[in-house]
Length: 149
Image 1 (cartoon, rainbow, N blue to C red):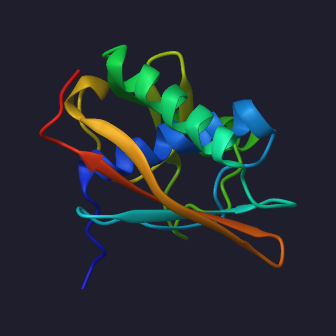
Image 2 (image 1 turned 30 degrees about the vertical axis):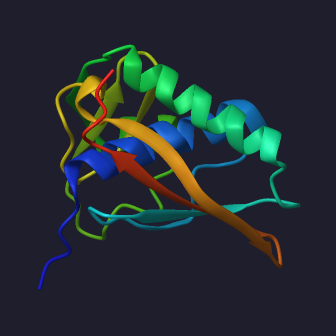
């Protein structure tokens, strides 16, 4: 059975990943579990987050969501994509044409999953918890889809 991604949570993962890159200089998550009700992302990190840092992440992600950025796709060939992106998480046999998802001018990365057409469709982002163990920061999050900006 092929893994099914929730387009809302998956788009939120893109925004969270770029927020972690911008705020803390981390790489994108190295592991993620994305579901409709709740999701998690694991990052290589050196400590737990402070409550202030969690709030900073939530505020930045919600700022991007509220900005109503378009979520678009473009295609590039494999050799060009290798120059610009880490392709290690793409499934083997992804082909010569690599799909790049762009969240406005905030984020771009190779991806095969589904996405919403605009960030404003996501609802309000919140971190439900975070934990740190042996160099891994885990962030668990949800979207309140009833709350639209």
